[in-house]
Image (tube, rainbow over all chains, first blue to last red; front, top):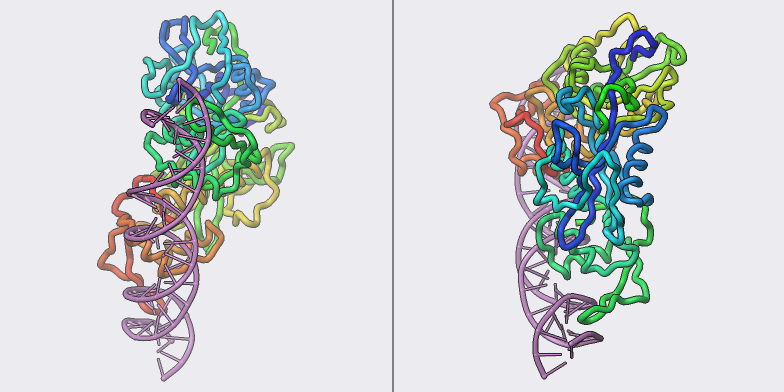
Length: 224
Length: 224
DNA sequence: GCAAAAGTGTTGAGATTACACCCATGC
DNA sequence: GCATGGGTGTAATCTCAACACTTTTGC
């Protein structure tokens, strides 16, 4: 807590890295970027970057998310801060990892010329990751499971209006297990978080009722 | 993720702060130190300090904990990283907050000459806190409640051997509510985490059986 | 023998699980 | 009319909450 300018023992670089989740094609996916620089050339990593000394960690994470996905109003929370002195071979960098939940619709991934590629990856088939990002991925997947069980943040993974089957699919993919459809629907309905709409989603079979969240703010409540 | 030496935009100072909890005198308490330096003169804060560029965040937290309490083998986990650029009026300092659980027995608090005092405070009667430590305190108290409900870390708040009533008292103080003794004991026994010892704790009344944890490693399991 | 805390079981309510049949639509 | 997913109810089980009396000790 020495705060004067002569003693600078705490001075290091600080970055944010973001694990951006979505569910699509019946799989849980994250965004990875492909590195150019040694020693991680051609390896993949979560998008991130050094913070600006004038912005907060949350703002740095929002900025990074916006740069990569173009989306703003999504669920974003701090995950964990990784501070092993050897985690980055190019010098001491402490990384605050965040995780974000986005609805997979019509999203264009972008990157800068510092990286050779950006893409969605199935979390069950991740390539070799740079830094300590394998650990980050594990941590994030675990936190996501807890969040789905104990909060309503699934709204951030779904389109504004959705069927109960779509919602159940998200739960099944993330929790990695099948859920009884009737029990799931009764449970969700009894929570009173959803408002049925007048619309129905047409498809090849019987149309399904569309629902929306009464409130798209995070609240803590046991779901499953 | 620019890691070369010419671009240093992420360079800031990084500190750890530790919320050290114990239960004693029928209250949940934390260690606070009293500041000397302006602008927080005479205000209280959680113990902490800048990290050494060569140590990990976890090591910095362990070092700080050892300095303040002399104890080593206790439960310690990262809580949250606070990164508001204005949180420290003396410059940009990002703080990784940790929380620790210690058993209140025979512990001598120590401090350095940088601070005027160190003491235990009831979390329900905190003095005015420096920095953003009011927010840190709130965050830590919440996390502690979750930890007690969903993990076995209460072992770190208890002596090695203890009565079920002592364990229940810890839960009641931290969760802030009364628990039925018979239901609590049946629940705890059914979890199979404890081993009854041959000893009993003598007192003014009927002696109580002493228990110990079979394993003093953190595991995730619903307790309450 | 009295006060105080320890020790122990049962019952009812509510929640969770397992399970099966009919319905609406596209083709 | 048939294949496919949508919509709904019930019975059995398990878990949780409420609750009271007896036992052991110190004084």
